[in-house]
Image 1: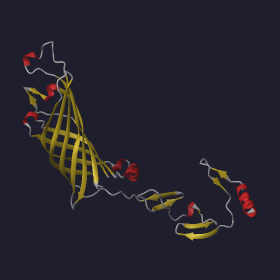
Image 2 (image 1 turned 90 degrees about the vertical axis):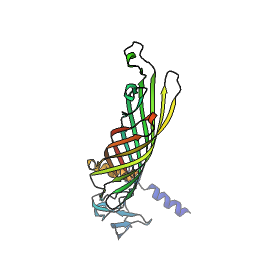
Image 3 (image 1 turned 135 degrees about the vertical axis):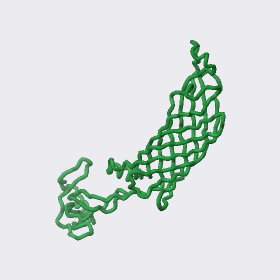
Length: 284
């Protein structure tokens, strides 16, 4: 017991060479460490089984980060790896839209006569099935379309009167649809990918007004068709894409431009439209 106490005192009394910012103590290396060759290069092993390497002589290093594996080369303490992309089965597309329902009319008043501030965000959740010459996508599509405006007289002769309508309207449209998309993509590194899609669903419609009248709710079935182009954005910053892939599993980012045709079948709510949209697609 006395021997162990003396031994622990001697080790505790050994003065460290330095202490780093995290409070780690570094001591002088003892000569009783034996040398051995490992797959990483020559090393010294102490009696506790700890391996000490000369970083300039390492053959290669392992990385704790996923997707990296063994480095292609090392230089000093830096290791250079071949990027291994994560598995890709899905995509999420954000597209910005502006409402323009040219066919909608109520009591002679068009959509544009009432609503003027139009904006929307559309989301496509896509599951990929790779085939020989293209990727087949199964899509659930949703989003939010907002618009606001003021009341309008149905009689054109009243438009110039001083007592113009003051009531304000708010319109929200929620699309719910399923689509099938053909992505003409034969390579993950293809810089431009054309696509076509088609599907069907419904528009859920909510209209509110500030004059105390009841909130109106309705829906109309819709049919969808469209097409566009995906432009690969990875080349702008390969290191950033590799980091996003490593941390979040997103291995490609695309700029998307599209043309979409919507045909609404309910005559009282004919929200048919032709729209140009843009956004971003994230493969994961």
